[in-house]
Image 1 (spheres, rainbow, N blue to C red):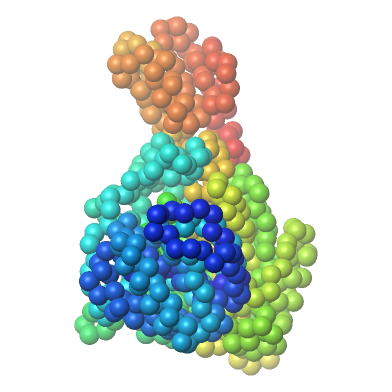
Image 2: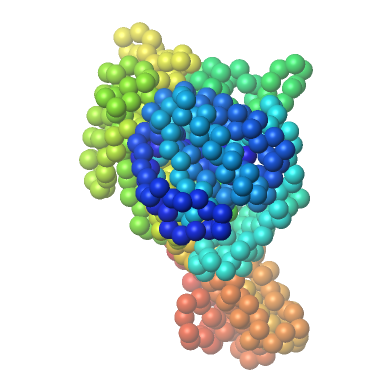
Length: 562
């Protein structure tokens, strides 16, 4: 059985139409509040011991219910989680057994089996918001059959879906031999990523950040000390036994940065300390819930942690907000908004740990920083992280679904748990406040949204190929290759196209690949020392363009990042 567990503030669902002949009679629309939603799919492998599978799934679900202290359970049949589904009769029998077992411990509802359903869900904002699990009759689970081949069904997707653009523009791909959720970056995609990482490093170093680098594997004791292991263990890959110690693939960067803080900070004179890293992290996602670049099993975070004294929090948080806006303005990202996520001590007192006074101070400072910044924002009670309030940057994807593209979180809990202190001006030890901050979120997810908003027509400075130089005939091949080489010498990403095709074919291919400039070199251009320039988005070809004039034009665009 495949499970995707989501702790939700509220969920509602509505049966739309039958998906299979064996669909059960629906009980109508449903809704639940403060519930653990268990999206589930019964698989062929479960047919051997269905009762045992239901028993194991019940234990897993109740374990998470206890951790998040959800008040109810929603069992939601969701066939999309698996490509190897059980027969409908056995699947329904397993779900009924599971529902009955869960009802003995908590209020439980089940959405109808065998129906297409629409649903609305407001998810919690803490590390247990989403967990994906694979359940079998055995414990621990046995290896299951390999998943179906990774094939993108383009028929129902809009043209600007980033998965479609990723294929068409040769930016990234997935391979069965590598695995679901593990993207392979093609040369065009790597060029884009490099530019994004270089740009962010430039912007952050100007703002006083220092770059660090941390390892991909780490002792489990570090995650125990930070408090992450109990919450994140189900989303982490199995530990590696190295000399008798458990090491984990890194699921987050913050505990490693805390170790660097200890080496660099003694007194208030060392604050604020701003550490940044393009850090790759790993999450154990089910193959059925991976989604292009938006939900992957490994991703690189545009991560940073700011260590500040309590009185520095408002000013530093305002600077983070300014960096959000300045970065997105250059990227051309539109349609995003801020959400201030606050605690709800009345409704969920056990979720938010730490000193209530520290919480109150952090909330007041963030709200004040956002008001001073001036950007409109909404507030949501109960959406704070377990360790502090935060702001989320919200955006809608090409399918109209609202998602969080990036976040900035204030941490007032972990610094006390890990003893992250400094000596203040009165020679007293104080705990720092930590701002977790990712302007782009992950580079993978950010690029997905950017591709969808631009339809793949990235700005000149980000385009993987900025200029395609096409030879009109074989006679012009040397001149075209020479111009492309000159452009590369100046740091532009340029390619020559001297293939034995018509110039119309070459131009059309470059247009489909969204290349900003296509330059054609023919006999006339060689004799006159000029170029024929086609600019993306313009119908007219500019003939007789002097080489130096063209170079000046693209130098200007690179400098201005347009």
